[in-house]
Length: 519
Image (cartoon, rainbow, N blue to C red; front, side, top):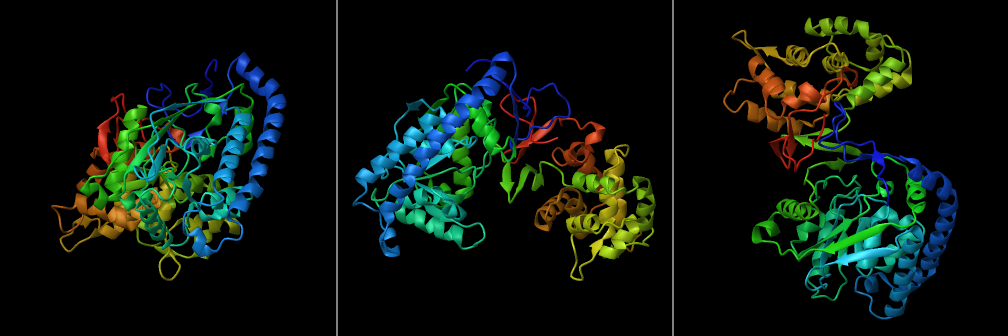
C-alpha cells in the first residue's frame, strides 16, 4: 500500500503530551489525496461488490457445514468425525478461502512449518488485532477453535463451529472453563486422532502495537503448543478492530476498498512446556507471550480486558485505562451540579457530620432532583449491607474532579477523610480506609488493595501513617503514577509518567522496547 494513514492512538515516542497509549483504542482517518480517493471513490464501488460476493460464499457454507453433523447424536459428536469428512471439509476450505479472497486477501505468505496434531495439539495465534483474523483457520486447515458458547446462536457462524467440533466456553458458567480444560486435555492426549485446537490467548482485539496479556485458558492443559504469528506487511490500519474505535461497518468499508491486503503467517517451532510451566499455567502463558513478542518485535504487556473494562497493571493493582470517576463528573456537570459546593461537603465529612447516606440523602446533599442521574452516581459507589454508601467516598471523587487541586493535596485529603485517631493521638489509615480510597478513585477490589496495604505496612502493624501514605501516593516508584498522572483530571493536561509498568515490574520509559501503559 502507499502512504500510511495516521491513526489517533499514540505509542512511545509520540511528542504529543497528554495522549496516553491505549491498546484497546484505534480510530482510522484517511490521510492524503490517494487514500481519500481510494476510500471515498473506490469504496462505494468495491465495498458493495466485495461484500455481496463474500456474503454469498459465506452463506453457501451454511448447508454444507450443517450437513456434516446432521443426525449425529451427542455421543457421536464427542468423538472425532472421520466419515463423510473429506469432501465436505474440502468444500468448506475452498469456500472459506474464496470468501477471504473476495474481501481483498489475494496472497498469503506462509513462513515455517505447521506441526501435526500429535506434535502440537494447540495452535496459539497472536496478535489478535483485526476483524479478519479468522483467516488463520483457513491456513491451518480448519482446526477446532475455542469460542464463546453464545456464538452458536449466530447464523452460519454457529454451523461452522459445530462443523469443526469447536470447544465452547461460557463466561456465565463457573464450571465451563474447567470443562474446556478437560476437553483440551482429552483431545491433546489422543495421539493425533483429534484435529488441532486453535485459540487467541489475548482474548480480545488490540491495536497490534503490543501483545496483550495472555489468558491461561487452554495453557492449563500443559501440552505442547505451536505459536503462530500474524503480520500485515503493508501495515494497513484500516483492518484493525478494537474495543473502542472504528465500528464493524467502517472496518469492512475501509478494508474492502483496498485493491488487496497482504498477510504473512509464520509458524514458530513447537514449544514444549517445562515441568514448572505444566504446573503453573500463568507462567506457561507468560513465557509463550514473551517468545511471540520477541519474534514480532513488540512489547509483551499485561494489558487485558476484564469483563467490559480494559485494565492495566500498576504494581499489584489493575486499574481501568479510562478512569470511571470522570464519567461521574460529566454526569453531574450535565445535570447542573455546582462544583463550588464540593468544599462544603468535604468539610461536613471531616467534621464527622456526614457519613453513610442512602439514595434520597445523596440527592439532597448534591442538590439534584433527576432520579436517573442520582441512580447512576449512587450505583458507582460500594454499598453496605443496609444499601447505604459512604459519603466520604463521594466527597473524594468530587474533589478529584478539581483540576486546580494538586496531586499532593488530593492525597492529603484522602488520608484525612479515612484516617482515624488511635489511643496515642496518632492518625492512622486502616486497611478498610485504604481500600475505600482505592475503590472510590480507581475501582480496585479489596483483595488487590489489601495486598498493597500489607506491602506498605510490612514494618508497621498499627496502620499506615500520614507519611507512609504520602510516600505511597507521591514518591513510590510504581504507585505514585496513580495520583501524579492517572488521577489528574483531563482538563489539567495529564502528562506521561517517567516510569511505566510492564509485565509486573516498574521499568524505565526510555527503553526503546517498551510502551507507556497509561497516563
